[in-house]
Length: 154
Length: 154
DNA sequence: GAAATTAGTCACGATGCCTGACTGTCAAGT
DNA sequence: ACTTGACAGTCAGGCATCGTGACTAATTTC
Image (cartoon, rainbow over all chains, first blue to last red; front, side, top):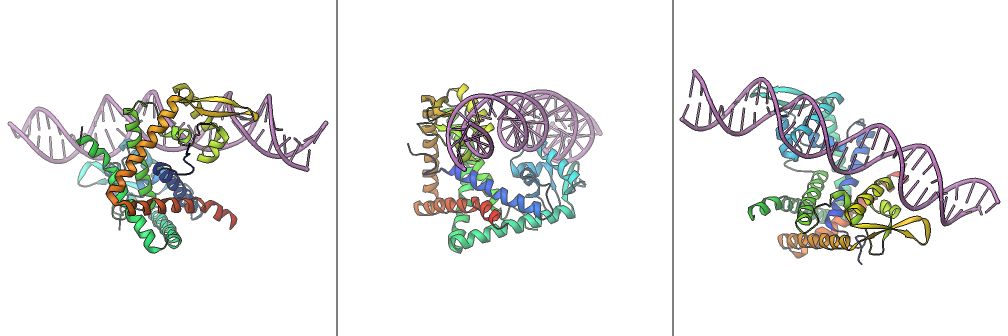
């Protein structure tokens, strides 16, 4: 039988890549002054604007439940990464706004990921990496659309 | 500020792709007679041989802790997907062997993933998809090697 | 033959996610 | 102007999954 070791499927490969990227990102962030940040915090930190975003918008962008976004925001508030501010446009709503510490983490995370991409670019070659990245975005969009495609064919 | 929506990083993209692949795989498996299988079961089912594999080998292949492999195997035994058999070469060891039901699930999971890859191949074109897949494997291997690279430079 | 290592399980605790219910607020319809 | 439906976020309870050290039996190494 041909095992997954010889020809790993897309699911295994993407899972392995995601974990390897998270390992480097969070270990490097830890060395750079952000030892408290966890992958789950990315549901908020990776999707924030400097102007702040509503929790329900974060939930929509990340596919994460609004209750979970609420608890992640609670944690990030207590760690000093974000603060909640009233939204003047809607007294029900709060805006999740990054603090200085939060902006520093966001900038450092972006820089680390840029370094990873540059290194991979040198490994694969600039054109090959650009083609890979473009295909990954296209493949991801297509695969995410599967749910819509499938429901409309029911 | 350029938000992640406009230029999502590799970590966000691979996380989204992995979740989208898992959604389709497990929903389709559910329709095809395997409603009890969960993503965590993939740590065992995706890495099995027909001859059986030791739990510690599964732990090594998947990066999952041996205790967790033990509990996943417990669950798969009770669901009828695998059985534990003594390993004649070592009386401490057990071999995790797929049952008929397990082999059926493995075959169906492989077929579903093959269908997904064929569809993506048609979307991107055969050569573009092949190049993407090859680059994904190379990028994953390289990124997984980061831990070794980093430890040897300490 | 003794010491070190391995295979797998035990037990406990930590972490993260899911769901329905609820209250205050807003927007749309009449 | 009032009613109704929808929305924003939190509450509370429960479920799912993972991490770690300790332990015993068995194997390997010296």
